View 1 (cartoon, rainbow, N blue to C red):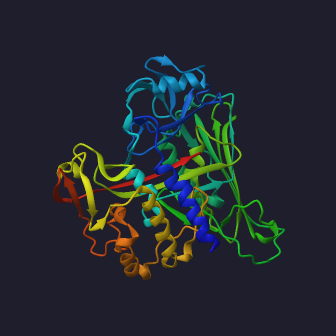
View 2: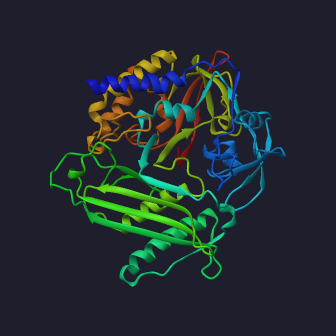
View 3: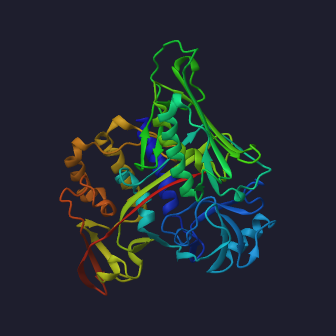
Length: 469
């Protein structure tokens, strides 16, 4: 009972309390990036560094990436500007020209626009997040923390280092080190560095160990292990890793250390280092750890948001896009239609009133939709799969996928008019909502007292992003 109450409070405060808030401004604009002023001499000191980029946003379209240094805005240098001055420079005009630098290229110019919408509107991207518990399989935000201790070299300029090589591979661990070096090469070249054994400016070293915990007493405790993100499978995977400061080391059988060190090849001085110290619930192959964690560790280079640990946010979103935006004060009213979108091409117009979506009524207030949605989640909680409970980025636990054995019953629940599940059309490609698997939508609309049924073939938008925060 406590879990259900917590769930309802979470949805009320974190979802609908944000979604249906009325803004005082007529338009809300965004460029789709977050940034902070660098305090590290090795990478863009006193300049804005891009921290995250929203997929499909103007920042994403302009080619911005996390770690980029914003050198100038409309030919005005950013070095030494205050946080307020930087904010004004980035917000001033509808379109601005940025000069950005990263490991791949220096002083690249790119045009950055704004994405603006009516403040009283809500689009399908926002609705997919608001109704994410309809389909956690498709849409979720999950965070995790890794014990990565990062040491940046304050007296070095990382822009000087363009190429890398490796030291001698020890015969005893030849296969392991060759595998590790392959993974490092894959990530470093993707960052813009070049593998050049004869002329490299960087020497890449790794150090690692896997040992039994000498203090382990053999006690078996029911402690949940961690989920970490695999950039290759694009999935959160449960690993035999503990990350909890409250765990008694006597209950942990294994210790694992893994580190990467970047060394100036001429001076042999370390310019950057990152080490992970992990507690393991059981034996874990070093190859497997390196495969998943090398990309995560190297997200700390060249710019680390935090030094003592590394916090990651995995954003997954998959939803039906028609191009319709709704009036948050009258959810039946179409307040905007994206040009050339599926809805636009099907003849949907601004001002149309929606009676039904796929036969599900839309004639309710935002408050009633919120209340009924929370009740629906509560009443169907027994249809969730309890085998892989996880905590989402908002700190809510438990989050669970739908039980595959109950898909038929789940679909019946979605088809009941009293559940006000019209917005489940956002996930109509999922068989637990639509057993027919035909992803076609039907909107019953009213336009100037004339009723119409409009068929829309939506575009499935899929977003997968991993950022540090």
